[in-house]
Image (tube, rainbow, N blue to C red; front, side, top):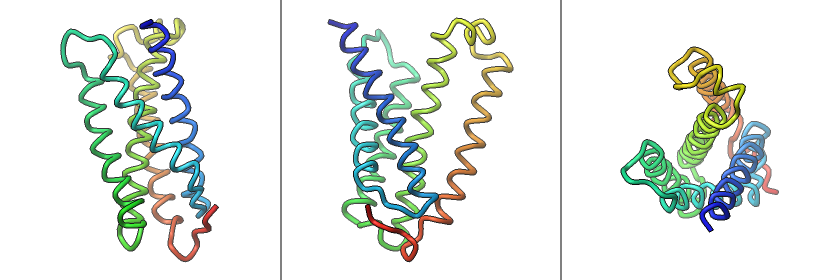
Length: 161
């Protein structure tokens, strides 16, 4: 039963990451892509919530990251739904959505270095340079994506789809 739950959790996570990248594409091309945004938000929330149901005997870094993700996602949902991305809430939504996506990708990189034998051999304790370089690359990519997204996802230019 646990294995099935873990597979479902991972599948939801991967759908969320994929939808998050499509949503980010919408930001940089000034397209709302509402269905993709909804899919991203819902699956990312589900990923964080289902992560708490995985067995653990203590609070792990993944639990702390899930709490942070849920806080960021709550702001994103509020900015998107209650505030309709009006005024400064548009940038707030973009930034919080991208932070949530960054958290997803951060965890993906951690998991890849734990589960893929070739990557595990490069950084068995995740304190080695290959792991640090991978995570630094992700951070830089998200900062650049964030700048492009906030700059391009403007009210006048945005097209609802």
